[in-house]
Image (cartoon, rainbow, N blue to C red; front, side, top):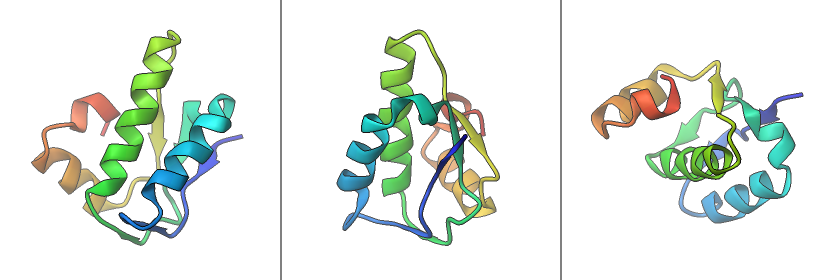
Length: 85
């Protein structure tokens, strides 16, 4: 079962979301972005933190159904390849 990102990921909820994801590390192998609508570059920080933790455990993160804006942000920040976008 994938980890579902909420509709909004901004500075206000990023830290809590990151912690929630790490508490549910087994579901983080696949992150579903289909509900993601209102976000900024903070979401990249969260995804990269999860990716780092999974890689330390010999696993990887798969991002599914990323919105176009997320792909653009990842490209602008140079992290597209790190997140498989």
